[in-house]
Length: 106
Ligand code: FES
Image (cartoon, rainbow, N blue to C red; front, side):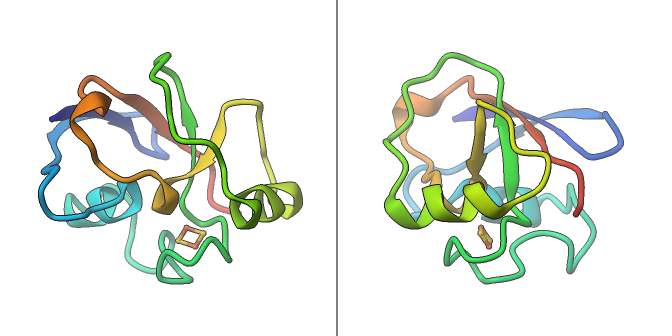
């Protein structure tokens, strides 16, 4: 699927994300090096650091937040109504055309 990711410098990248590798959005960002090493995915995708926070700008229907994701976002900085943890968003065919922006580093 193709997704658009705006990095923390405000540059938008359209990238291919595989849906058959059980990848999440945080891993896609890392694989394209759209955020410096060590600034995203710090907890390894456990919904425990919020370094992967992003703002979802398209109106895709995303899976509900888990209690862990909700709890982490309740503590994180720069949280908006459309904030999600990238590591909790798995790449599935219905997310083709997803548009997200990385939250500022905090
Ligand atoms: Fe830590 Fe997503 S990588 S919350």
